[in-house]
Amino acid sequence: MPTIIPCRTVAEWTLTSRRQHANPFTDVTVDAIFSSPSGKTYTMPAFYDGHNTWRVRFNPGDPGRWTWRTTSRPADPDLTQHGEFEATATNSRGFLRSTPGQAWGFAYESGEPALIWGDTTYNLFGMAYCGADVASFLRRRITHGFNLLRVRVPVSPFHPPAGYSDWQTRRTWPWGGSETAPRFDLFNLDYFHTVDGVVHQAEALGIGLEMIMEGWGFEFPFNSRQIFVPEWEELWMRYLIARYDAFNSLYLWTPLNEYEYYPNGDWHYKPVADRWAMRIARWIKATAPHGHIVSVHNGPREPAFAQRFAADPEAVDAILFQEWGARDEHNGWLATGIEDQIQRSLSGWWGSAVFAEYGYERNPAFELKLPSHQFCTPDHTRRATWRGLASGLGVIHGFENSWGPWQHLEEDQPGMAYVDQAHRFFTEIVPFHTVRPVADVIAPATWPAGCRPLALASGNRKTIVVYLPVGGAVTVLGAVGDYAARWFDPRSGSLHAAPTDGNTFSAPATGSDGRPDDWVLLLQA
Image (tube, rainbow, N blue to C red):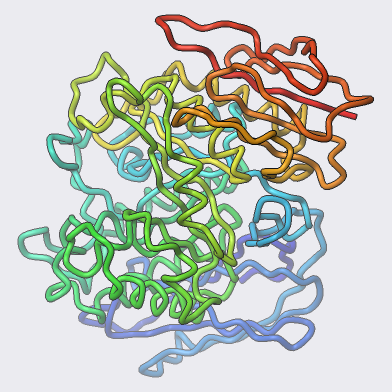
């Protein structure tokens, strides 16, 4: 049993019973109660890990002397123990927290503001289970500045209309039995040991995970709530919390991907799905003691989320907002509509938010398994990224190389270079937390759809950033005088002097195929 534990380090206790249980996953409930130096208590569920062994994982946050004890139901002396340990101070940045109204809505416990910069790799655990080199992929994602990956625990082999995952060489069913004869009272420990390995790798590398507890609601068993009843759902979620809530790499608990699929797998807005989201968010917070963010990921964009969750404002901490913008042959390159939909959907929202899904960049070398990706080009990647950032939101994109039916983890797609430049701009040139979206620095004008400039500024207006989706000219109010004006090229990352006619600035006239390039105007006092 551990006796000295650095704060914000995952510690593990192992309990072994001499009793034989017909089904240890359901016949025994084990909890550990931890008491902090200040007297605050935390109840952490234990999980069964085979061979008559239960494990408890806990991550102390306060230095000093802690005590712990375990309980079991039914009572088992081998599973009822107690002890103490010393938690030592560290300089860890700690868990990610939701901080609405501060920075862009997220910060670490240390107070360091966090720019959410992510990738959607839903099937990462399944890929690892089938032998992929996930560790190298994680290391490369870190070199691109990513700090969060969207990952689902249950991995299915198919996404409609034709997205068969040919890389699956092993069944990734996480329960007992099978899809045709499920045993929700059993868990596939071989699969979970692989998940453990990926989570430990993320922990060591310092990259966060959004743990999606239930996949898309059109999949079995989440589309069959008469089979996957609340009792099995609670057993499943408790097991996930017991295994992974202690990790620093656990950034977000998301109960269900595109949660409006609840309860029948039918994708449209349903008030009952809101009721479920609030109830399950409250249950997660009551069961998971480390206080991680509980988020929801949307399918339908309206009504606004402030309206949806008005009945319980403290249940859901963050919206992982999905909006792809235009993705047709003629307008996909421009990604129109994103910022307007963000404003409508998040109007009045009191929590945090991330622009968490805006398409999956198409790899033309692959078979077109999902027609909705066809016109998600590198230009769509770049403009959608900037539209989200100009809305004051961190971003989480996705690439076909590492999404869903495809597994090509060794190479990045062209749009990654554009994402890199946006990350460099908001971390090295203009730190993201120093600016916020503003509307009153751009002179009123009539703009074609998707062409309106978007602005951010510091509180004292000494820094102004204007994103021009199609270049052109923009008149900036309040920027006359001692400002250094430069154009940032979101394709190359280069900076150029920006000549001005009073307070009107004209972007360099660049582009191809009749499509003007986008530019970023940077004004600094």
